[in-house]
Image (cartoon, rainbow, N blue to C red):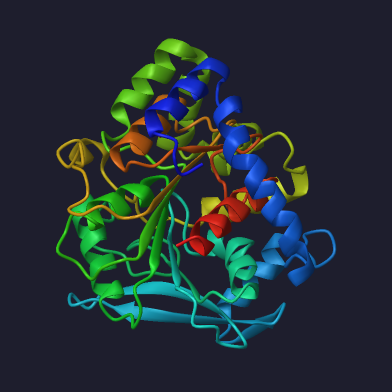
Length: 346
């Protein structure tokens, strides 16, 4: 698998929309998953352990124990005095493994990682952190809208990571992926590796929007309206089209809608201003990278995934059945297994 060049995988993805490339990666990930199942049961099974909303209330308390992990909510103060909400979930028994830091995308907040991913990785011995960008979740809001520029969000994360004792793996979803890309171009506290999950590509989202508009004009307009009007928080069908697959059950979809509707106190970024910050150049130094996408993603297209893979010299991993919100969708565990395979191989 390591011998594959990204361009060869990209060609296979073009031929069969990811099935050939995904099979190469997915077969090994699936087998690894079966071996790991003996380590413990899955955390937070929705049907057995209550609703998503009730489970997420754990984040409002100072300490929560679940599946032999502990949850802490705290606030990181920036030099400006602004405070960022941080969730930290850790295994009860320390393992010394590389910590994982998760960055969310637009209209999300740190909570989105704490539904599945943080318990999953903490149960397997990893210290996990999820940060809410300024103006999102429980973080402070700056004056005016949007919440900040790409450079400001990157600077915030730079300050947070500067206080960590170990080099983490930094993982970003959607717009959070752009922050990761921008971060590794700075003279910043080093990271051990990066994960770009359903990430906006280095060129930004403008070219993707145009490709979708030409390829699927009606659906493209619906997705654009969903973001611009935040209609995903009001219309279940639009919410599903934007973020989730058909396999996600209706009850969970409704709970996610409520959380998404209340996650952002200000727009995360001004897309017009973002055009001045892209394209993002290649990293200052080579580093291990995971580039992961979803076959059912309606936000980041195949060409965007290819672009990111080539930029970071990483063969893209395309997850069958997975939609844009890889950490919340019905097939979230497929993405989690792929990430675990990556970090365990570092």
